[in-house]
Length: 226
Length: 106
Image (cartoon, rainbow over all chains, first blue to last red; front, side, top):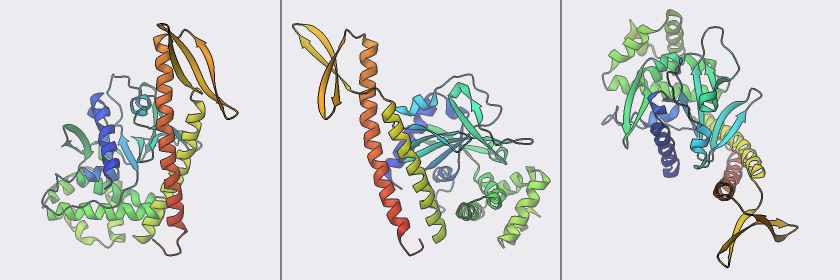
C-alpha cells in the first residue's frame, strides 16, 4: 500500500473524528478491509486490490446536531468538490483518494442525491446498506475510533449486490472480497456471526444470497445456514 | 482477476480526467495575482502582483484589512497546492493511458 495514500486516509479520518463525525459515519467499501487486520490478527489476512474511492455510509436518520462544512474541512488537504454525473453526486477528490458518501435507499427509492445541507454535501442512496449499518464493529487505529461493518456483514452484503453491478469488473471484485472474508471468518471459527447476521435478514435477501452462492458453487457456505 | 485490474485502471483514468477538470476549474475560480506587501518608512503598502501579457505588473490595492490579507494568502497557498496536485493528476493520466494502451490484458 502506498504510504502517502494511507497517511492521507488517516488524515481524513482524524479530521472527521475531531468533529465527532466518526461517531455517526461508517467506513465501508474496500477501505474497510484495511481495518480488519486486527480482527483477523494471526490468520494470514491480506486485503486485495482497492481503488482510490473511500466510502462513508451515513445511517438514516442521521442523529447528529453538529453542522460541519465537510468540503471546507478537507480543503487544505487538497480535496476538491467534484459533481459526478447528471444528478450531481458530490465527491471530494484528491489524486490519492476520492471520498464519497452513501445513505441506505429505502422504499421505492430515488436516483436523486440525498441532500445533507448541515454537512454541505449530498449522498448517494443505495440498496441493502442497512445490512452494513446494523452490524458494525469499532476498530482503533492510531487513537482514531473507526466504525466499520462486521466482516460477516461486509461479505454477505457483497454476496447480495455483486449481481446488480453494471460493471463486470466490480462484480468480480465484490465476489473476490466476499469469499476472501467468508473464508477468513470460517478459518477464525467465527461462523456463528455469519449465521446470526444471515438469519436477521429479510427472507428475500437470504434467498438472493443462497442463490448467488449456488451460482458461485459455494454450497459449503450455504450449508452453514441450514 | 486480469480483467478486474484493467477495469479498475479504466475507472481510475476516468476519475483522474474528471479530477483534472475540477482542479483546472478551481484554479480559474481563485482570485488572480499574488499579494505583495511593501514596507516603506514604517507603513505597509499592499500591491497585487499579476502577470499581464508575460510581464509582472503591480497594482496598488490601498489599505487592506487583516481579513482581506488573510484571504489573499489563503488563495495563494491553495493555488500552489492545486497546481501541485494538478501536475500529479496529469502524471497519473499519462501513466494510466500508457498502462491501458498495452496489448496484453492486465
